[in-house]
Length: 227
Image (cartoon, rainbow, N blue to C red):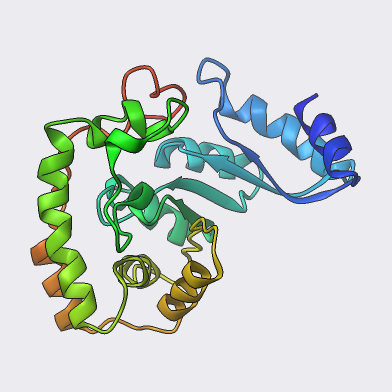
């Protein structure tokens, strides 16, 4: 029903890639795959994708039918996928699609102001943007912004370049509302970071530096936890 609704709204009869963004964890993933494979056989979808599943679930799904892509949050301040997902995707030939590669605006030139978030802004109740966590995070990220400018890049471009440097099977999906920001994204695609730069970035933003969980309890519905 969800797929049929999407096809009708898009006014198409086929989509190249269809994601299960939040799967029912009580339902075996093999059963989910069987349904998706049938939709593929009917010619309604080209590839099968999942969002925020675990490496173990990916292996189970892939054993039924090849999975095209896995989408999960990944950036310099959310590095959980390094604990198995990046490696599993590479091994199986699955594209890894990082969302929020710019840390929900933290890696922009101008720091976000939580006091200005509208009520419907996802970040308003997000632990990393709530005090005292936000002030701790901003103090750390501000040093990264200065470093990015020393490298001749905007903070967003450097953060995105870092993601792109983590493997050729990564396809990040940064959001943008302006041509200026799109140009920054394109600059990142052309920048290969040196070993020295990667080490310096790691020193500024070590694994686990972010204060606060990436979701509040109310927001944490669906992602599979692992490690």
